[in-house]
Image (cartoon, rainbow, N blue to C red; front, side):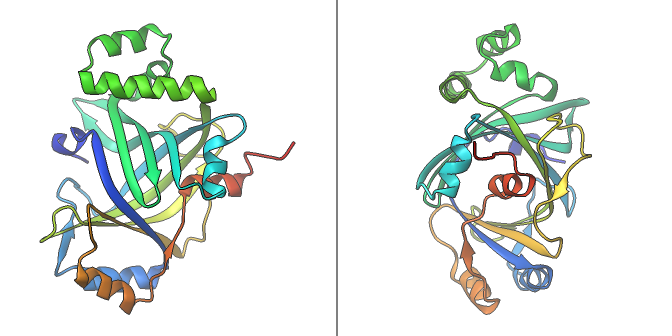
Length: 251
């Protein structure tokens, strides 16, 4: 689904704003943005599936950081695009996502999907071999992944799956809008090749829209948001999923 250029991006520093909107509002917004935006050029299809595996501590440190509204947060996840293949190999991103208010810094390495759990384990031979062949930048990310895993005793906690539509501005190349629908989650079977067993975590008539930009939102986009009564909300698919499937319980 994605070409090599997108997969080669291993570092993002941008702002992200989220909105919970209806299907009708999504369709209206797409109608208005179509003259000014195009489908993300790296994307082959109008819709594509995203599967994310989230890690957390046994006490849910990352989850409660979000629930408690901490401005500075960190998250470790694995992201897989089922239709993305290169030479018949299935690849995945191991990502560290840091947030400071709405500013997002994302660092990631690309690994074979089958090797994800071994590479996250610094003591495995597969992790050591991968590290020895990695670039300096990849080694830095790996060291931080391993540090987070040791510090919080991280383990897989939930899988979130959804459909995404992504648009990129024809003028401001770094301005993107995405629409996520059919958002589901599960707290067992952490194999990202498997889709079954997930439950809807928001009503199917609702969409999570995200605006992604480096500095400012274009005025024309602000006018479209205001014209459709869009209100910025603090939304986390990870937290929504855990709330729905009740992974953490008070002791």
